[in-house]
Amino acid sequence: MTNVTLEQWQTLTAIVDNDGYAGAAEAMNKSQSSMSYAIQKLESSLNIRVFTIEGRRAVLTPIGKIMYQRAENLLQTARQMEEQAAQYAEGWEPVIRVAMDTLFPEWLMLEVVEHFTTEHPLTRIELLETVLSGTDEALLRKEADLVIGGRIPPGFLGNPLLKITFQAVAAPSHPLHHLGRRINYEDLQLHRQLVVKDSGSRNIDAGWLGAQQRLTLSHVHTSIAAATKGLGYAWYPKLKIHNELTLGTLKALPLEMGSERHVQLNLIYADGDYVGPAAKRFGELLTDAIAKAKCLQAP
Image 1 (spheres, rainbow, N blue to C red):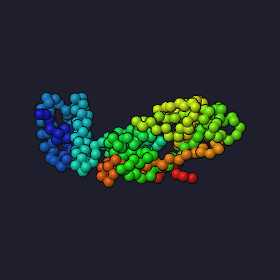
Image 2 (image 1 turned 30 degrees about the vertical axis):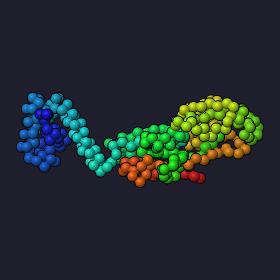
Image 3 (image 1 turned 30 degrees about the horizontal axis):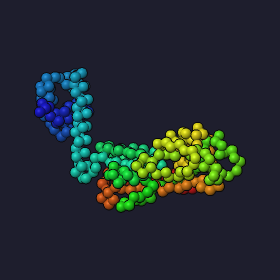
Image 4 (image 1 turned 90 degrees about the vertical axis):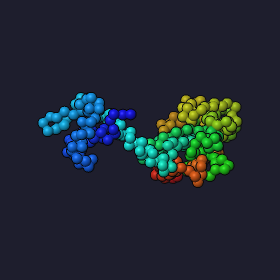
């Protein structure tokens, strides 16, 4: 049981924030005498002085300054608790779990997260980055509330979100760039292909050509770094290698066919029509952000 009430701490902060008892009394719609009594009660309960009178002004004592800072934090916590309880009463989820295929632009996801957390700072977000079947499994294992993935598993519905264009590339020093002609399937098989490992249990080899040499990595950024060092060739999302193509550390391979590939990413809600309001709002922000991002629009 505390000796000081929340209202007494509120009185303390109101006096400081409104530059005195008169302003605080007006702000809190109370009499000055009731404000004075609340502070006297607080001081006697804690056996300290929070204010000293200088002329006609109430000034915080050194201890009062500390109490004022703590009171601000306490009141902010109380307000957050009330807001959080109100959200829960409306069915708002305390946590939303998002599974994102690593093909999706991270910068765009972080913009959406920033927007959402600004609107709803009390809702936590858990972001899981997945590859291939790992995205499907996040749905099937109930590890995510909404998913961005290239495939829609049986029993789920999804909306098209973003088409990803892949480009076949290698470092300018790679032997494939020095053949002096168009590159065919047999040429590719003679060189090391860089492959990003499936994060799920099915170990899907999407895009692997059966090259004699293969380097498997767990993340697309590591794979891109390996490609810039000339360790192999690969197909990467153009959005993720824009800087490397601009700087010339990666160069498009002149293939006879298949130099570009396309993957449709979809937005899938784990609970379908019964999606919670927080997850639904996150999905709306995601869709809006893609629509507004000019660099994602088809030429």
